Length: 142
Image (cartoon, rainbow, N blue to C red; front, side, top):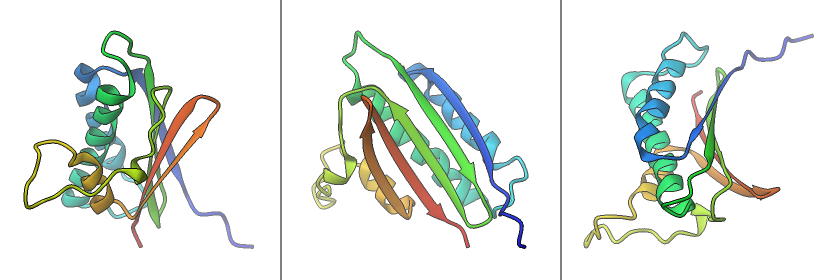
């Protein structure tokens, strides 16, 4: 009988405020630099940090009214074959898969976050469960 693949998980819940975004990015760096069973070079690590920054910043900026910030939860999972970034929040429902592609010939100065998520990760799934948005971003590693 083959043993199940080794999987590592970590999670952090934090108030959904821009001032805490560096904490989430650093948490991501520490997780993926901690000797996981998956190959993570400097470029891939940067991509994971950028993904977390863009996705969580969008939650803070657009998911909650300015005077009302709740919590968001970041979950990271790594196995030899994939890395998964999952973000939970109770903000306004929004499926990023429905966002239009930006016009790169005439950039508007905003709207590139979801574009980056699509380019940096292999899949992006959204669901709403019991009043929570759950965004799952997966990068295949093997």
